[in-house]
Image: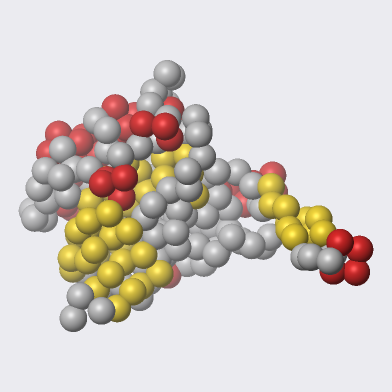
Length: 207
């Protein structure tokens, strides 16, 4: 058995969406050995930092929040598809011949995996592909960048997926992951009434 960590590390200098300083985690040492006898750290960060899950409330008014999560969604087989050749957007034509079925969790590896800094022209999931996946009834979709779409007015890709109860997993690190089927574990932190949650995502490769 091999466990592959596909999560981003949470750190002060980590890559954040559009390099916005306000989205970078802030670390503060709140207790010291000399003064307090223990060492403790406070962290302030946006829930869309690093590897995270979007719930419907992110873009859908009165949409389901983290309280409605079903843990079965976040553990199970996942299919990794290599789309490193795609230059701009993952379209229906790029995925229509893939073996994607109802209940699948699909992860898209793109050229984003080769870039550590934020790329304003990152590869994203186009609306026609998102609609196709939602119509199939997949349980989740993941991508190797901090956004499932890129500057699309009114965030239609998010909407069609989240309205279809498709979980969105963003901020993956798939550079060293080969195309294939794995066991995915991506449990969100148990934070109540929020639109997103940090997650430690790993792939388990059975040998």
